Length: 225
Image 1 (cartoon, rainbow, N blue to C red):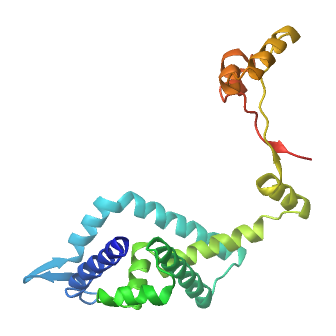
Image 2 (image 1 turned 90 degrees about the horizontal axis):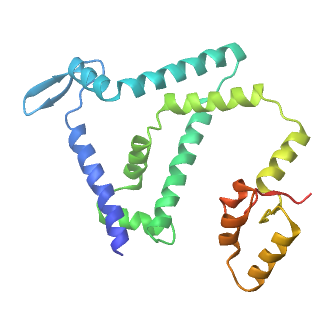
């Protein structure tokens, strides 16, 4: 229960701050972006602060988006409004489910009830997720375009896909070794192992293959076939 209070409390605090800020918002095309206790805050002041705080990050993001859009135009790749909306909805719903699991609730209905207790609607909560993860239309559009460009330009054969799958998810053999220079040394190591001496400790100390020795004798995994 304590966990739920923390989750909902965080949501409530975020929404409260956002609602206070929204009270001062004006038209996007105005040179005044906010009025605080009678004092006007200009667009230039906001721009200067954002550039100083996020300038490099923002510039890099702008460059990436521009490059993606240029390549999309050359490749005749497009995304629809429906695709953008679906991607945003899917990402938001995934985050909602993750928060439900973290808070120990059984389903979304119970989560909605906890939100309502804090005076928060599900729509408000979804809006905060979009804001927190910067799921703007422009950002999501760029991501979808990039995915389509990759799918169009990178062609994989069935054999390449199968090989990649086997490498990632196929059956693997895990083995350990102690490499020695003579049979006599090997027999002594076997006697020590049979006597209960730790294998990894022996590998680190005695193996002449220093690569696997550093890992306690563990070799790199390899496919069973």
